[in-house]
Each structure stands twice: as structure tokens, then as C-alpha cells.
Image 1 (cartoon, rainbow, N blue to C red):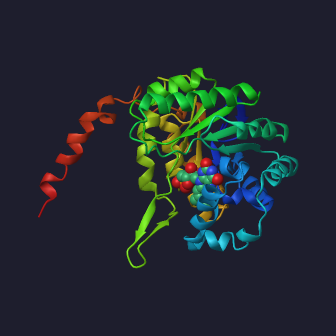
Image 2 (cartoon, rainbow, N blue to C red; image 1 turned 180 degrees about the horizontal axis):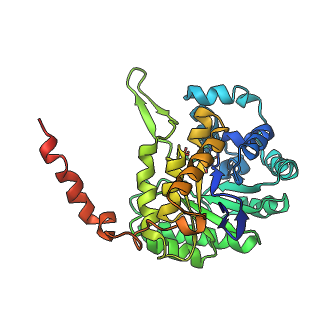
Image 3 (tube, protein in one colour; image 1 turned 30 degrees about the horizontal axis):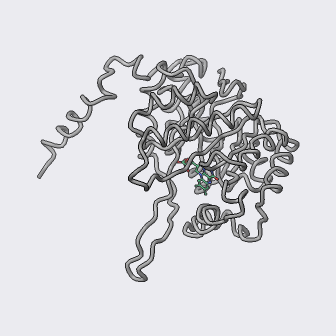
Length: 333
Ligand SMILES: Cc1cc2nc3c(=O)[nH]c(=O)nc-3n(C[C@H](O)[C@H](O)[C@H](O)COP(=O)(O)O)c2cc1C
């Protein structure tokens, strides 16, 4: 069985990649992920706010967010004691590269086209095999047009790609009006891969204390459907590697990601909730399925259920909408 896949010009031994998460803060977890079979680890993000010494968004995502989540706390009881400044980040990349044989992908998280992106070069110099750029931005200004926002993204990606030789992937949210066109523009700007989709940490309202609380809830397999559909639509239409993130919890989910057209499936929540050793079980499950269905390579499986290759391509589009609604007509009491 040939599980090899290519992602961002890197040859990976299989399509299971650890998504950016706090798990990669501890070198021992990275080693355990390697032992459990993952082919690459995306490091937790180095945030623009962290680099520019405004810790607001950094604390929001990395500290308060995880405190809300009991399982995550079990994994990271010492989170507060970690020193996670930019220098330590680079040091962790170096150490992970030395201690493992798998690919280590750095992650930068920010939006402005300014000095903080010098860290792309530093991440490359620290030995990262590739860079993931997470563009997590909530456009609240009614004056800002979709064009302006997208131009900002494109310029940012261009600057980052021009500053490094390692391949760059862009992690995007699903909230764009014309996603395929934006992806083509980002590809022209130099991106080698798209990571779909970023999962926003949604704030909740505490109606007892009249406060807004950040929450970080882990995903479920039900959330796989959104990125799955988009990957299936994009496969063969854009000339860029696709990585699926959000909702992969089982070997079956991973298989679906690849069948839709992803080069790799990325996993965070499942490893946080049930341990990084789940990687081995997921890979075994995938291989068993491939044996039964007579797929001897990931290459043959990839994109086999993309929109271009299924019998009913309309099922990925508007036609599916009415059918799904009608399926409830006879189920009502
Ligand atoms: C505890 C935790 C920490 C995370 N930290 C980061 C991060 O630093 N950078 C990033 O781009 N994504 C981060 N993510 C998002 C994941 O990489 C992933 O895209 C998202 O959780 C969806 O995948 P999943 O369904 O496998 O969890 C984090 C997720 C979790 C659960």
C-alpha cells in the first residue's frame, strides 16, 4: 500500500498531518506524534501581536481559549509557565527538526503587511520545511470592501512568499464571496497550498455576568462537511495543493478528505481530546478501507470523489440544497 502524498513540494509518507495546536509546544508531543505515524506537524502559530508586543490576540487564543476547555487543560496544565516568545518559537522549530525525521511546518498568524513578517525568514532559517500563514481577520469596518480586503491578503501573501524560499501555504476562513477566484489570486501571489478552513474561535455571551467570553470548543466530524464540499469543488479547478482542516476525527474522515481532493488531512481536536496516539488508529482504519476497496495508493484515491469525478456533480451545488430540504418532508410528525 503506497500512502505517500505530495504537499507543497514535500514528499510525505502519508496524508495525516498534525494541524497547528498547542500540542506542538511540547517537543515530547511532537515526538509522540511522529511515533504515532503523522507525516508532518504544523507548529502552533507565532502571532503578529506577539511579535509586535501587543499580547491581546495572543492571550485570547492561546491562554483564555484553552482554559475554557477541560480536556485541553488536562493536556496543558503548565501552559501559563511556558515562555512562548518569538525566540523560543524559533528554538522549538530547531529542536523539533533535530529530534524528529518528519516535516516541520512553521505557522505565522497575522494580517498586516508590516515588519512582523520578517519572522517568515527567521522561521525558514530555523529549519522549517514550509510555512503556513494563518490570516485570521474579522472585517468589522462597513467602509472596507471585499476587494480591499482581498487585495490586503494578496499583498501580504506576495510579501511573505517573496521573502522565503520554503513553500508557503495560506490558511483561510470560509467567509469569502468568491473563494475560487481568491485562491487563484493567492496562487499567483506565490502560495503553494491552501489550508481550508480556519475555524474561528467564536465569542459567547455570559448573561449572568454580562460579559463576552471567548470559547474554544473542539470540532466534531459534522464540521467536516464544509471543507469537504469546497475541496471537492476546487480539486482540478485550481493549480495548488489543498489541505483539509476542521472535523477530521476518524480514518473515514481522513479518507473522505483525500477522496474529495485534499493532498493531506490535518487534525487538531481529535488529538487534543483523545490523544495523539489516535493517529495510528486513524491510519490503520484508512489502510483497511483502502484494502477492501482495492485502492493501492493515495494518489489513486485523491480526488476520486471530487466534483469532477462523481456521477452527479450537481450534488455539490444548488441542486443538493432542495433535495436535502425535501428529505425532511415525510419525516415531519
Ligand atoms: C487547542 C488548539 C490550539 C490551536 N492553535 C492554533 C494555532 O496556533 N494556529 C492555527 O493556525 N490554528 C490553531 N488551531 C486550529 C487548528 O489548527 C485547526 O485548524 C482547527 O482546530 C480545526 O481542526 P480540527 O477540527 O482538527 O480541530 C488550534 C486548535 C486547537 C484545538
